[in-house]
Amino acid sequence: MEAQQLNRMLTKAQILAFLGLDHKLKESKEQVMERLMKLIDEDATAWQHLLEMYPEELAVEPVEAQTLLQCTLLERRRWIEEGKLPVLTHRQFRKAGRTLGYPVHDRRMILAITQEDVAKWRGEHTARTKQNRHAGSQKSAESRKEHQRLRKEQQDAWQALIMQWRSHGSSGLVATLELAYWTVWSSRWAKENQLKSRRATKYATRYLEQKSTWYQHKNKAMRLLAQTPYARLSFYRPPEPHKISLHLCETHYEEKREGYYESIWEYLGLNTQEVKACPRCLYAEEKDYYSLYLLEIQTEAIPDLVFSFHMPYPLGQKHFPAPSTLPSVAHVEQEGFFRFGRTLYEAEKITHREKDVQTRFEEALSRLQAYYPAPGTGNGTNDTQQ
Image (cartoon, rainbow, N blue to C red):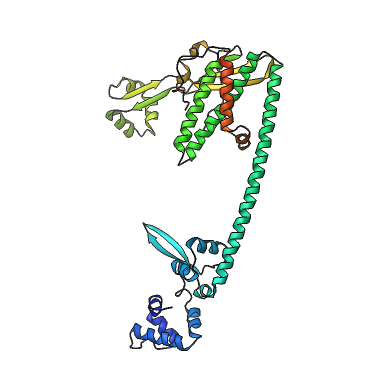
């Protein structure tokens, strides 16, 4: 180590203490450093004694460690994780208002590591990487084989289900049940993409687009399924079905604040008529915004088989009868992100892949359209369920 580097690491008092000199010695730090360097040159054990006396002061920082070991930053970090480079302590520094830390190493330990040691560590890492890649390749192959087996089982079960349906009714019934079945999976993939869009950072827009496409598929299928003789349509109206938009004028907002109301909605509940009559307040109510059409597909030939789908009233009102003409139903809405239905289980993502469901859905839709005229004249581009 050069004198200049030692001079930065040790104080004059520390050098005097090591040399056994009086701390009041009338010499400059440079002169004292010359004494130290001379001792180190003349006495082979002095350097080791100095490292023993001041291990933290003479510790090796990251960049110097990489220089001494002739290694990269990634290698140094990996060797620390593997325990090959024990950390003496951590030092801290401030950057952009944050306190960050970095490891330092005992210089004796760093200097004891040879290039033969470094070569051995690199060889071990290369062998381990090769072994892990081989194991990963084997695992991937086994997973692909298992996934193929699961998809084959699902296809066999699907063919058996089709044969069962055919034994109970006409080809029109089979086409109806087939579309209903794949519409269920369309709905689940819509929910899956909606969840993925909330978690994603890079592909959130793509997932939202896929969610929208799946809901368009589902709503298009519902309109077609509603034409079949196996459809039963009803209407679900929740306890608070209407969407209300509210903006209080300055006078009413001040009254709300002075009255210690918890929210503008509490104020509205107790002053509804005054707010509605005020020309400066903005009050709008969209009827049945949170209500839903319920479509059930069922046949007496297979009484235990029921497919159920929901469509928001704002989307369904132009395709389905007025709510007053339909029977009302009561539901218990589930907790969580979705009011009804569910997303996909992990195993279902294997047996009902998104691309496969897309193909099956389109085939089923085409088959049922051969029996019934296409509903409506629009292309469904605005049928995006929220």
